[in-house]
Amino acid sequence: MTDHVCQMRVAPWVNDRLCNRYHGSVTISAGYTDDWPALVSYRDLPEKGLTRFGLDKAVDDGVFERIAPGLFARSGATDDTTLAQAVIALKRPASTLCLLSAAALHDLTDEIPRATDVAIPRGTHPIKVKTAPVEWHRFDVDTFDVGRGERDLFDGLRIGLYSPQRTIVDLFRLRHIWGQDLAIDVLKRWLRRRGSTASSLLAVAKRFPAAYPAVHSALEVLL
Image (cartoon, rainbow, N blue to C red; front, side, top):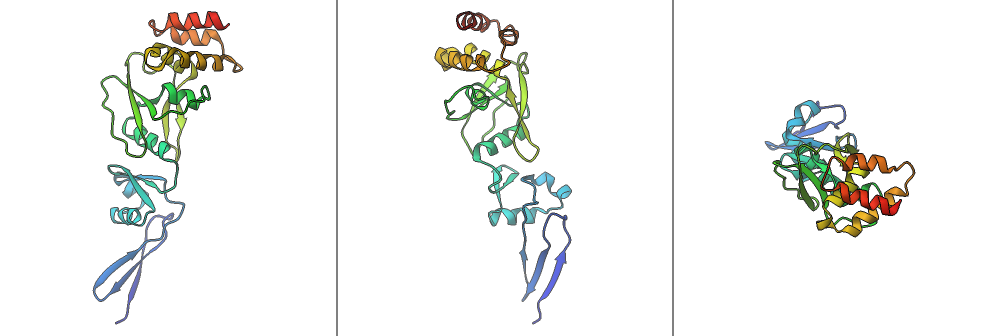
């Protein structure tokens, strides 16, 4: 019996797939390249020129991995912690890296976070993340955006990140949990950095009356 081979047209960044019929059965052999997007969801398939069957085949072949319900990442695209942050950024866009995680990203501490510290507005429900441990923190809605910037992840995706000043204020504000020593050490390291000014820190601290006295007193001692 003669085999029949047909080419299927898909997006330009996907290799042609060969449809091989043999004795009435159909098998699909998919070719993958680095031009595939690093992140894809079932909802993205039509605009990216993919099919659900093709994506499921890519998962079966180990080319993509499921990192959340309906969300997939190319295997080896990045580390597990960044994958977790990508899921958070997509599922909870307001989420912001904070406290020890933010301090580490700003190179203000040598302590390694045991989990990624993520702030969400009070009233927002956290999500389950399987690729890396996450510690959720509920912050007040009225001051949630104070000092909030963004951090690039990968494939054009970004996640919220608090500024060094906001991070210091939060560590003083929550020093009963994180410890006074950590807050002081992070502040000392920040003050040694060129361009760091007490005025910029106090401007943020004034938005948090409970933290302002402690921040102000620490600056008086250190400066």
